[in-house]
Each structure stands twice: as structure tokens, then as C-alpha cells.
Amino acid sequence: MNEILDINPESIEQLISIMDEDTYKTIQTAVEVGKWKDGTRLRREQVEHCLQILILYEARHFSKDSQTIAKVPSCTSKSK
Image 1: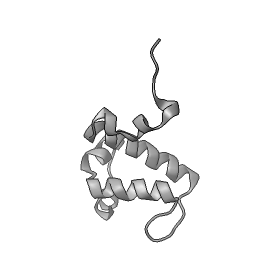
Image 2: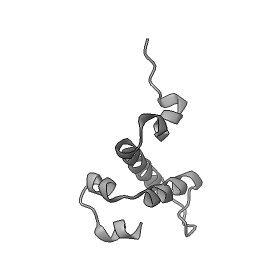
Image 3: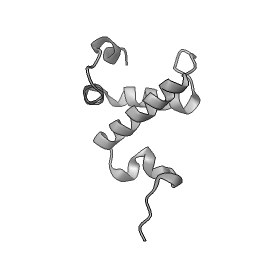
Image 4: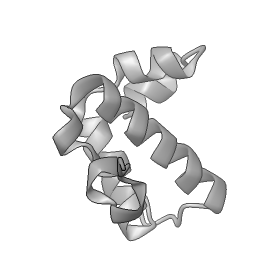
């Protein structure tokens, strides 16, 4: 994760393209427990940004069925 912070990506696309699975899992765990590995609590803005990053990463690297958004009942689309 520190590698990403050292690079200082210019765009969200660049950030997602340089993220690896370990970074994804670190962010996912932080959102789930509300804290970073060092115990620092995530601020509301950080949670929102991290969720956006997770969704974009999943869209690029995971199949539709394994994306977090597919597991949230209120986010699934229903056709008539």
C-alpha cells in the first residue's frame, strides 16, 4: 500500500491500475472494521473514497458475480 502512496497517482484510473490484490484486501478490511491496520479510525470521507476505490477495482478485476455490489440486496437491479 505504501508503494501507491509514494507514487501519488494522477487519477483514479491510474490508482486502480497500479493497485494489487493485497492493497485491495487492506482497503476492504479497513472499511469492514472501520480502522486501518495501525488502529487509526477511518473518517467518513475515507470510507466513502475507499468504497469507490473498491467498486472500481472490482469492476476492473472481478466477474460481475463476485463483486461486492452484487451481494447487496438493495443494489441489484430487477427487470419487469
